Image 1 (cartoon, rainbow, N blue to C red):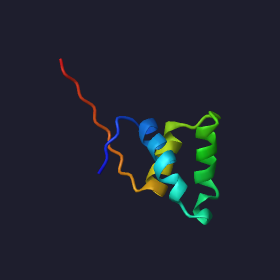
Image 2: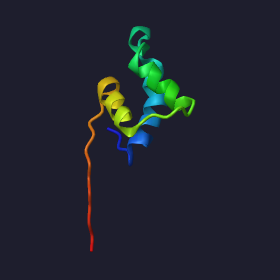
Image 3: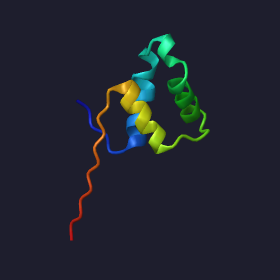
Length: 69
C-alpha cells in the first residue's frame, strides 16, 4: 500500500510507474490523452486525474478534512 498527499502527487506516480506497464490496447483513448495532457502541460483537471487513477490504476481515493482549533 502506498499513500499520497494529493491527487496530482498520486497521478504523477501513476504516470511514471503504472502507465508504462499498461498494455498497448488499454493505452488508447483516455489514458494516453491524460498522459499527454499532463506530460506536455496542456491542462488536466483533478477530476479527470481521479477518474484515470480509479479506472486504470486500482486506486481508492478518500478525503480527510481535519479542523483543529
